[in-house]
Length: 90
Image (cartoon, rainbow, N blue to C red; front, side, top):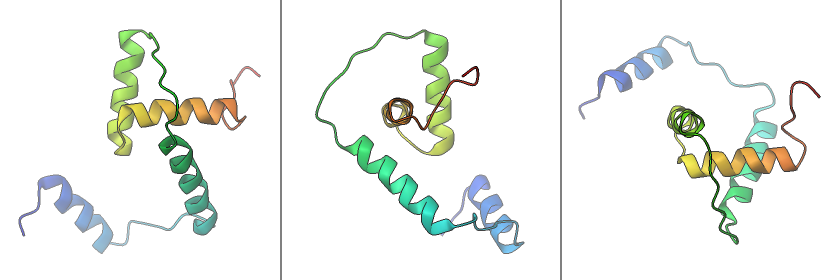
């Protein structure tokens, strides 16, 4: 199997032991599974307007996380309305 440059770097980093498990990995797995379930439940459609600059930032962040940008936006909104994402000024 032929690997891309990025895939080779990832493989090399794993083989060199540069990856570490997060503390309390099962708790983190449950947390992200809950986020995923919440964003998968799509029973309402919402159209919003945002600046192109913010939209591009969402797209870049989503790409970095390997998510569709709509899923990231939905996740951010979900976290905010459930009190898991707060304004730094608060």
